[in-house]
Structure formats: structure tokens, C-alpha cells
Image 1 (cartoon, rainbow, N blue to C red):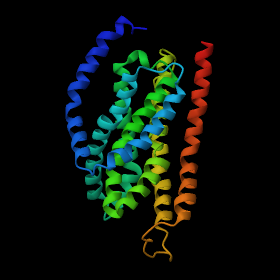
Image 2: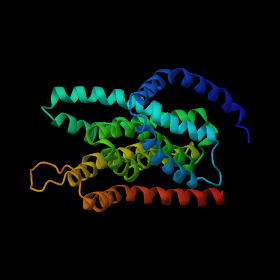
Image 3: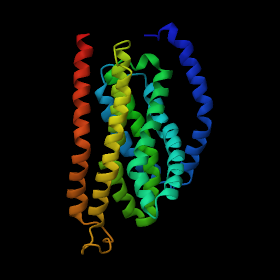
Image 4: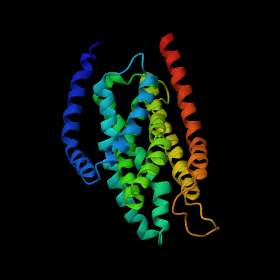
Length: 294
């Protein structure tokens, strides 16, 4: 079905503005990929592709056009990542002026980065919705598009972190990084931004209802809370079990134990990601039933 005529001028304007605004982020994105070893890009992309297939299954009956879905991934990988990179850099510089020593980096990573990154991803999602206004008309549509923005963002972030893993641990470090960060933890950004997207989609379907404009803001706030908990608690716990010093306060093991890699890290990941995924799954199921009964 062709989009309503009233939406076409606005969509074309948004597309033209986006094309111009994307030039600088696209250059940054290209330079980022060009500066890493060749094995890093496919290593970061494969887990993201698996998560993308899982997300698309949610909306398999009435899937949005491929261009819209690809645009969501691109917006997260390029636009949101570029915005977050610049803002996080400035945030860390500012934190270093008010908090002594290494506390500045920990504070920025645990509390500042989640807010910065969720806002950046929300802006990218809002742009995708503005361009394809007729492609996000319900909770499920918003959830899927938000998750895809998160998957794109996670890809670019993982390219950077997997590069560090190679520099520190060689091929074995890359394999551990892909397993821990891109595979086990690869759904975290998708879950966070899907929360915002679901709220945005719900609000778009109920335009004019009292208080409906507050719902996307509440979704963003909840996404930030999930992100803060992940960065401040889960990520620290994972780092601790991977370090696994033989004596309390001692140096980290040169290689994580099998127990920490294949038992403890999956348990921690499940504890902190599963509740959000289950909630989103329930929302998607209820949204489908609502669509079918409409």
C-alpha cells in the first residue's frame, strides 16, 4: 500500500535533510572501520546478524519494507554511534575536571554514557520514524525498529571494543570478546532501545489520548535505567569474574577460567538482560493480539 499523500512531502524533506546530515557521520564511520584489522568487522557483524534475524521474526507477518529496516540499523550504527562517541568524549573530559583520578572514567561509563547513548539512539529512531511515518503505527513496529537501531549501535561499539581485545589478547582475546561482548551481551542495546521504540509506537497509535506524549519519555527513562544497571552492576560483575584473581586484591589471571567464561558470565548476563527481553516479548505478543483484533 502506498503511503498517504499527506505524508509524502514531510517524508521527502526528512530524507533530504538526513542525507545531508549523514555525510559527516558516514565519513567517521568509514574511518572507524578502515582503521581496524580486517577480521574485526565480520566478527562484530555476525552476532548482530543473528540478533537481527531474531528481531525480524517478531514482525514476520507484517514486516516493514527492507529499506526501513536497513535504515534503522544504519541509523544506529552510523548516526547514533557518531553522536554518542562525540558526546561521551566531551562527558569524560568534563568528568575528569570534577572527579579525581580513575573515578571520572568509572562515573562517566556507569551513569553518563547510558543517558548519552540512549538519547542518541532515540534521536536516530525518531529520524527513522519521521522518514517512514507510515511504517511505525503500533507498539510492535516501534519495538522492532528500536531493537534494530540498538543492534546497529552495538555493531559499531563492538568494532571498537573487539579491536582492544585483539590488541590485548591476540586471536584468543578476539574470540573471548566476540563470545562475551558480541554474542552473550549483544542483545543489550537492542533491548534498551526496543523499550523506547515500543513506547513510541504505542503513543503513535493513540494520538490525542490524554498524557500520551509522556509515554515515549517514560520508555526512554526506563531504557536509561536498564542501561545504567547493566553498566554499573552487570558489566562490573562480568569484569570481576573474568579477572578472577587467585587471591583477593591480587592480579588478574592471564586467561579467564572455563567456569567464569561458560558458567558465571552467562548467568550474570541472563540475570540482567532476560527480564527486559521477557517483558518485551510479552509486549510484542499483546501488541500482536491487539493488531489481530483491530
